Amino acid sequence: MKDDEKKFEEKHAKKIFFGDKIFYVLEGVYEPAEDTFLLAENLRVKSGDEVLEVGTGCGILSVLSAFKAERVIAIDINPYAVRCAKLNATVNGVSEKMDIICGDLSGLLKENGLFDLILFNAPYLPTEENEPKDWIDYAWSGGKRGRELIDRFIYSASKYLKPDGRILLVQSTLSDVKETLRKLRKQKFNVKIAGECKVAFETITLIEAIMPAKQIQKTFETFKLMFEENT
Figure 1 (cartoon, rainbow, N blue to C red):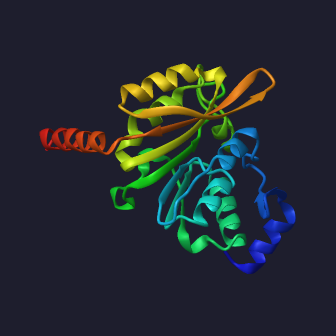
Figure 2 (spheres, rainbow, N blue to C red):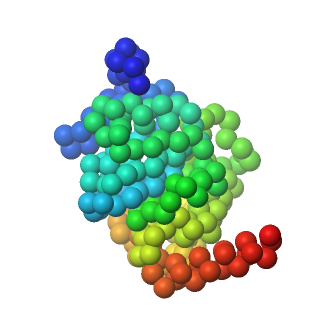
């Protein structure tokens, strides 16, 4: 990002702070709220970790991860969010450790490798419309039951995890936390509630899920067999 572009966007963006770090939120990008901060306050990244964030928004969680992680890949379907995350990576001096990609989990390539930690502040609000109308709507629109993207993530996430890899997933009681726990356990994850935050008529819930190393090997063998049968 060129210096003049960076200065222009800093001038016209909203500023937010987390600890001693500053972040900018551009127009058309989800502004960090209780769900974001619940995850940020419980974020534990070890030196050398490789981290993937799905739906990075302004990039706050990915940037915080990058201070300790070996590398961070942040993806978002919203092109304005991708630009905003790049700005915040630059401002906070971690852009060299981050790859910020416009797209979704299904488009993540094999060469991106596997991850120690996957972060997902899921779009969890139930909505009547089948498709989001604006880019920013993708940050919160979870379909009729608020579970459309949560369920898709649950069934695909293990493909991107290293042995004993972790998931930190945020959702609301409006989209049935118990169902998420049940489905994660069905996928052989060890799960627990890592944090909660009550907001108005809902409780924001942070779920931690760990895939045991033995189960990762079984999952790999299953996908390998499926691939061989289709070639």
